[in-house]
Image (tube, one colour):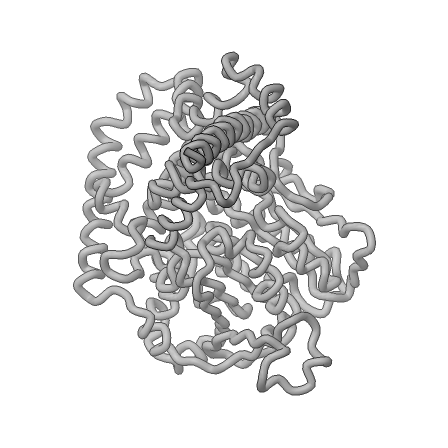
Length: 532
């Protein structure tokens, strides 16, 4: 009888906790959606955790763009040495808004300021300037780099650029067109060789073939009245792991609702506000990069007829990639070297210095936002940038060693917790990572050709009718009805049925009774975890 009474008490405890968790979890979703609605009304929403001042507003340039150059104002107590090399952090415009490179104190921007280097940031507005192109953005970035160099005439070297994801290939194109401007380039999770990968893995590289090429991108741009909704790109990322998107991520917050609220809301501030691109911009990206793979083989030309050849770059290039990155696997981050250079002698003769590092497990977003990565790889690259700048041409791997470990002489002379050394490698090291064989390359080339045919058919026979029936009001309605945005609006102040959820959650917090660790439900969960 005593056991039955105890079991009944545990059941009441369990359901009380479950009810309270549900209210608190609903409040977290409500706050997420309400904050997202407020941010959507802002002129320039961002998630930077640092104060800044605008140096150049890209909308004022001769070829206007929605990008701007900002100077990061160092926090109180942080001293900057203007004779040190300035850094420019460039965030990706791949569906999300700006600020991921400086979302926390332990971030790319944070470690640059910690090292005493001047720091700048290139961000962007949610909507593009009508008519702006990828080439216009490259042209603007070149002017930004030139301005930073002008502001630091006594600096030890040219500005170093950190390009995250999409911004990585963007600054590579800029440096290829203006090789005299930039110092070392750090590419964090940036794809450059889009066909590369291991057969059967990295599903995003097969997306173009599954959809028949890039005609659906053109359709989305036409339906958007000349604009492409970044929510499509974010949805593609989420669809790579539906179990995480639709269950694991939400359940993790529910199961840890007393401690996970702040972390979850911080991340969702960045993840939940997709931006827009001009249809011409995304078409250039899908045609020339994602499906065409024309960047790594040097077949893209600007409007002046200049070939965008990555071999023109004379600045050292640092490639930071990870085996845990399912968006930009190591093959896509490094395969461009195999596309451009037949052997190591050609790489050295071309005068290029390339340093790479392979993280064992960090995911794509962790490359930009993980505090452990910021305090290790990014911090050491920042400290070692002057050394990287004078390395002889060739391929190197950056090896990070805990300075408290064996084999480190005079650890007291090294700043930070790690020592980095650069070990000479050859292109065979990259081939050993795995990748396409000749047959795979022909298959991707076939898809690229099929895409051109379907694109031509769509532009000739379908696009004129779609454009004739589209207007800005209809395009805006479609954007608001996108499932990605709807899930935020349904759990926000736009839903009158949730108006009282915050007050109810406040009452629950005052009476919170989490389930005990010895409750039968807790024991069952522990057993299930151990079996899985």
